[in-house]
Figure 1 (cartoon, rainbow, N blue to C red):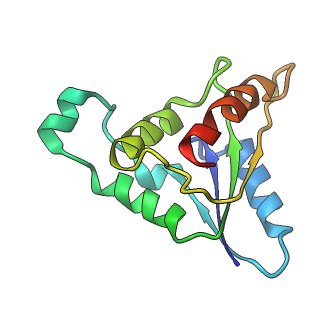
Figure 2: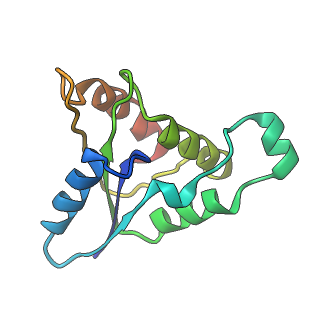
Length: 135
């Protein structure tokens, strides 16, 4: 089984990257690839930039990684009660190519935070919205 895992953060010291890497390592009989959002840095999404540059190849490359997986493991960073800007930007670009970003893949969602609710707010957002994008 091919599993793609990533932390929805661009922090080089992300506790969510540590969590997703550890959790994915526990999967038995799985070929795991841990992605780094820093490898998918894109300009800030806007329709004006989209008209100017079209669909970025890095957004397509990210979608291809998800599409080639049998399952996904995602750990969501919480920034001020929401997704990290890096993840939201990549996600927005991806939806312009394929609205069903998660491509009906079985998806494990995780989150950790040093905050009082430990990532609960971003998890609530994700559990409400990600099924609409085929997670």
